[in-house]
Every structure is written in structure tokens, then in C-alpha cells.
Image 1 (cartoon, one colour):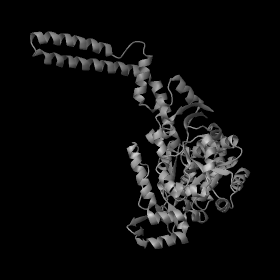
Image 2 (cartoon, helix red, strand yellow; image 1 turned 120 degrees about the horizontal axis):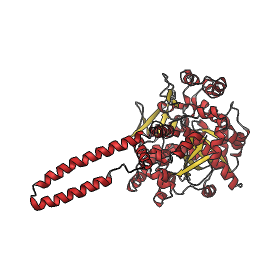
Image 3 (cartoon, helix red, strand yellow; image 1 turned 180 degrees about the horizontal axis):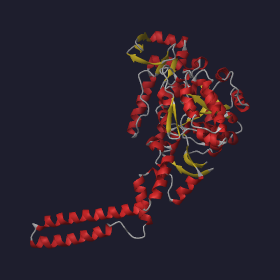
Image 4 (cartoon, one colour; image 1 turned 180 degrees about the vertical axis):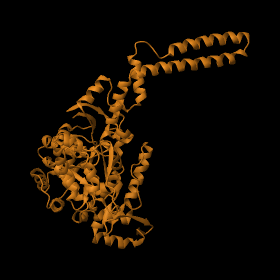
Length: 529
């Protein structure tokens, strides 16, 4: 259960633009037309247009993508409901990290489930379904090929396929990744539970299929719909946008204007805008950048005219892929979506896109920064309380914290500020006398007193060091807590994986979902496990 929670402001979390968005500051209104709130989600249904034909295309794609995968009744029901004009989505997305990667990928999905559940209770006249968008067309293998487990990095170091879009990477040789994980557990019951997750990768044809199976397994009870944008049927909807990008370079123009406004407002740009914001996926599954040179476009070393490239888009839209700035547009074209839930970095690049959405006449979704969760055991919570420290306190330097505790606990004053002041008063008196007798003595007096000041400072340092030594046990406890909350200097959720938690508690996922209560503003929540 939740033991404590903090606002982003209290925690000094995220970038300035995200903190201003969270606090609904007026300066952000130019970049996000509506601020997120639960009440505003219901209002967003009036602005979002999504035809019956679009719904049929979406449902057909989902049926096709899930063929052969056992879906829960709740997920199947949500897919069927998408045919209805009063059904809407609340969406998050993530890379295809092996075994879901860092914990926050789990939290993002849990958040859209929690928000959808809350909206169905608040507004029974509409249906709200949670969606997870798989970033299958990314091509940065190094970002997804590892997890951290018990303080160690376990990576899939393979040869070949690295240049493929990640969704099409075949898990050949995945045992080099799964075996070191399996070897960390000797208990037969735990090994059996772990095999339910590692076997998914051994039995899947590619990482898209594996990720879909993993997320279906974890969130089967919550009606989660999983979407793969790398779909020929869905990409037909993206053709007009791709053609316009080739014809007009409209994204570059719109985002460049927005970037200037962001800079004037004191914010930096999250994503670099290019003269052509499309990729080409070749027959080997490799995503290649499309660059523009006047009226000529280049893919790899080949050149294409504008007309040729447009014909290619119309004939084979599945071979064209949006980059980070056009992916949100593609998503909103093919989903009846109302809100997007993401981390600070993701939401920051959405804030570069308002003018792009205006240019396309497309409804801009509500943006909600995801909550953060910190998992602590009862013993760790007790130690925090006994040390009289909060989670934000532990962001500070260890030695400063120990020094502060030592000074608070000491029965006598060991800082020598008073003594230094007395010494300074004596120095001033002697300087005054010297000035009336022989001003040449002033420099000598100052030099002698400088030596004495340094001696007192050394004495103070030794006194504090002696007192700190008495607090070695507390220092070790603080160090362990810092390692738990900020492993390797980062936040726990960006480092640890869900595996140890779910093996220890089969209800781990439900506890995360149930503790992410739907609220207008994001929070950093401390959860006792």
C-alpha cells in the first residue's frame, strides 16, 4: 500500500517544461491546448472525431495482430467495443525492452489501466479502454537488449540483425540472455515461475510477438489492448500525411516555428526536427533515413524524385515509418484516442507538435505525465522513519547527510562558528590598535590570524569527523537506502526489472494497478512491498 507521496515540485523532478505542464502554468497553453484532468477527458470525447470506417480498419488490424494469441475475455470485449462510436482509448507506448526492461514500463501500462477504469466509473455514457502502443519500428537495439537484475546488467550480446527494426528481430540465441537470469534462481518453484516469462522469448518468432505475449500475460485481467503500428492495413491511414511531408516538408516548418517559441519561453527542444521526418523500411527489415536535398530524396545511397517517392508511399505504405515527431500523429490517426500517458522526455516532444496537429486538422490529445513509484520493504520504511529522513532527502550527498545527523545528535556544539567569531573580533581590535600605532603591522596581524583561523577550522573538522565516526551504523543504513532508491545514481524505476518482485509476490501487478489511483496531477508514490 502507498506509504507516502510527493509532488513533482517537492521532489524537484523532471525538466522545467514538464514541471510547468504539471502545474498548469499559462506559458504552456501555447504548446498544449488543454491541460489534463479527469473531467477534461470526458470533454475531449466531443472534440475527437473517429469514423465507423476508421474503427472497422482498427478492429480488423487488432484481430489480425492477435491471431493465435489467447486473449482474456476483457481484452476481447474491449477490442469488440472499439466498433462502437462511444468507445475511446487512453494510450501509452514503450520500446520492446527484453522482459519489459525497467520498472517504469510496467508503471506506464498500469497507469492507462487505472485511468480507463476511473473514467468508466465517472462517465458510464462512454467506454474507455487502455492501449499499449508497441514501438516495433524503433531500431536502437542497444537500448532494449538488457535488464538489470540484482545489481548486474544482463544483456543479449548477439551478432546480426542489430540494424533491423526491433519488432522484426528474431530471438535466435536468446538463451545467452535468458540462461544467466535463470541461473540466478535455485528454488525450483521460482525457476518454474520465471520460465513462464523467459519461455515467451524462446517460443516467439520475433520481439514484437514476444512483447505482445508478455504484456498480455502480465495485464490479461485488465482488458489491455496492444497495438503494433507496423501494420500495412493501419499505415494506409498515414499515406496522406507522408505524402504531405514529402511535398511540403510541413513538419519541419511547423516544429521549427514551435521550437523558436519554446526557446523564447526558456525551454529546450527534446527532439531534433529534420527536413524529412520519415524512414524507409527495406526488404531486410532495416529502417533507413530519408533525407531531402532540394527536390531530390535520398535513401541509403539511392536518389529518388518527389514523384517516385510518393508513388512508393501509395503502393507500399508499410515500407514507410514515422520518426519520433510523426509517430504521435500516426497514433492519433488510427486510434480514437483522448489522452497520452508518458514520461517527461516523451511528453516534452509532444509539446513540440501542436502546430503539426493544427496543420493536419487533427485533435491534439490530453497529455498526462506518468506517476513514478518507489518500492520499499517495511524494514526500509522503518529505517527511513528512524533516521528522520524522507525519500527526497536521500538525493543529497551521503557525507552531508551524515554530517547533518551528527550535528543534530551531538550533545555539545562542535561547530566552532562562535569561536571563529570571537577570534575575528580580537583580530579587528588588534588591527584597530595597529592602525593607530604603525599601519605596517596590519598585514602581519592579518596573516597570523589567518593561520589561527585555519587551525580552528582543522580542529572543527576533526571534531566533526570524530562525531561522524560514532554514526557509522547510520551512515551504512543511509548508503544502503540510497543504493535501493537511486541505484547507480538513477531512480529505482529506471534501473530495476519487475522479475524479482513478481516472483516474490504473484499479486505484484494488481498491487501496482490498484495503487495508481487516478488523479489529475502526477505523483511520486512510495509503495511498501
